[in-house]
Length: 200
Image (cartoon, rainbow, N blue to C red; front, side, top):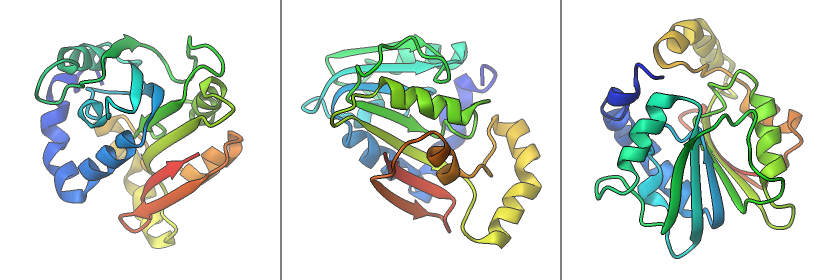
């Protein structure tokens, strides 16, 4: 991802717009409230969608130095930045977070589960840091479809896609969530069941 960081936004902007991903990002981030932790924040593509009336603090982290650099540069810009008053970007790995247990109202992860070495471990960390009473984990992910023929296609091209984008788009998202011990509160799927919007 260090190699991709400077050109990442340009590479995905058009496809995210036409596929509706941009709107899904906006809707997901708009639902965040309180003290928010965004993991695998990338270049900060969600920053402008957080509502400063609902979000008290925003801590955004990514494990990739290049992405952190881009996200920090974007944080306070008019084009893609955030108006949340207390917002910082830091280097951090969702699989091993230096965040206090039960300290976060909302965890946001968009397209992170496909790239973690230990996706279940990352989800368990999200579960650990979120408040037990009313805390939420908001996910926008891509993965295996309920349609076998489509999942077969994803499987066939998974290695090539991973080499290009650093992610495995054929992971079983619902099983990962179940294995992590999270309970799904709300779920919608798009793109023939390959894109998931989840509140847990």
